[in-house]
Length: 136
Image 1 (tube, rainbow, N blue to C red):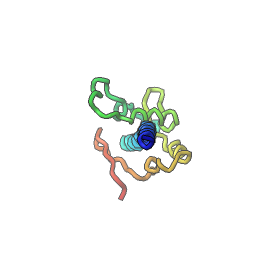
Image 2 (image 1 turned 135 degrees about the vertical axis):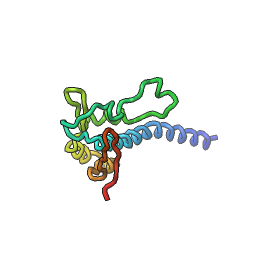
Image 3 (image 1 turned 90 degrees about the vertical axis):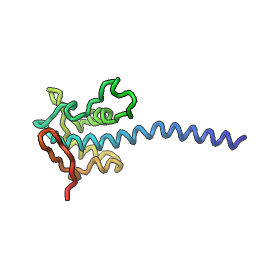
Image 4 (image 1 turned 180 degrees about the horizontal axis):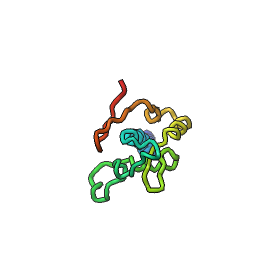
């Protein structure tokens, strides 16, 4: 009987730990994707800022989200806006500040290493379509 109670307590603690840790990991992964999107669209300076909607960073309407997995990119954008890594211009366009991203990386943990590798990806754009390719 005591072993059953102990196992149940351990399972409940693991559940709450996963409940807290999993969203944090998913937001970190989304932050990497958001930085890649900004680089792919070339929105890395104020004169090349773009609306978040044009880069696919705004969440879809409520009815369109039903039955799909949660998108953590809007939460990552909010976090990066608060950290001033992403800067909003007066006309509500956004761009990525590579300088502030480096400062953010220096203060953050090593788990954001992919986010901080500024030479990892090179954008290739044909018109409005942008894809990412690795440097060779």
